[in-house]
Image (cartoon, rainbow, N blue to C red; front, side, top):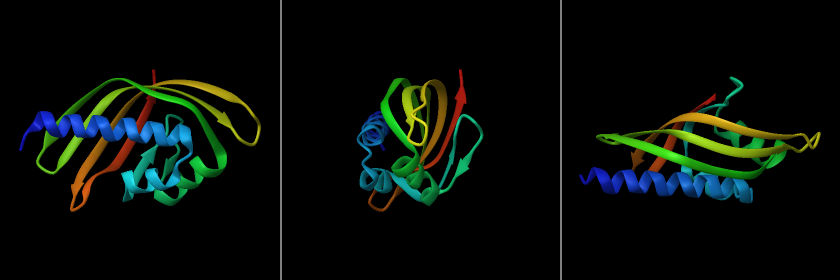
Length: 125
């Protein structure tokens, strides 16, 4: 296994995920996250896949989402990605804009048809 190629693939998938958030592309997000994903927001809220996708679709507009540096470590069929995430969101119900600067830890699992994100945890910087 070429770990540098796997790391590059994880970075590419994370860039695709960020792009999908801004575009509100639920189909792409659905394909990128595992059915058993656990998504922990910076405020401590924990979502499973259905509630995460519903949140993106119905509650939050992502105005921007970009990664600073993403360090990726591979162990077999698992990859851990840690790095800074800058994003601006708007709460759909209130119009409140929030600029976020967080560190994230993500686990990606190799599945039969590609890599899927199985955990995401954000911590405010």
